[in-house]
Length: 114
Length: 114
Image (cartoon, each protein chain N blue to C red):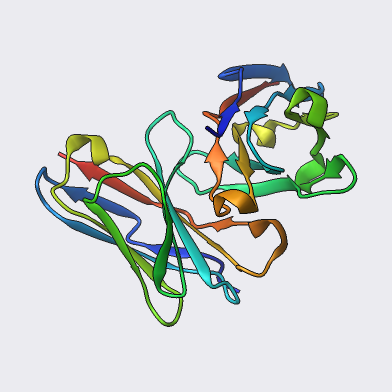
């Protein structure tokens, strides 16, 4: 079992550009959540996808959008990048029918906006 | 609003000494509680979790945590710290009533001196 995988590992963009990050969930998981972790802070919830729909959203602007595919993998898109979007983006997968929604995290994508 | 407080930003302990990392939460529902560990540049690894039942839970790597509802706390403990335990530790709270998103504390950086 490969666990949760994310790509790319690192990414450098300039202000105003758009970026797409990808996540493949752990085998058997059907729910994907995305978190942003700024330097020196704890992860902040962006949104969660289940059955190809956004089920819940945190306090992030509409520049952040996502998608879930039929195979449960997911993308995070960020438009009009700002310097403040520089962070580690973490994907977590879980099984909706599981107790307590235990979430398994991927290694993250480090995004740097110049 | 849901919140998690980890009062200690940094903690330094000697190898072989005991460890306690503090976590307090504010949540309007019956919480699920987690402790994650993050090594530099890495994703989050689950150490242990509390969903219900016995309030003292055992995790991996010799860690344990105790849920105290009256104090809204979920402190992490280890009787004897190893140099390899040096990392950042995050306490997180979730609840089915809030869609199972995780709310994280700001983290505690553990340094181990030999």
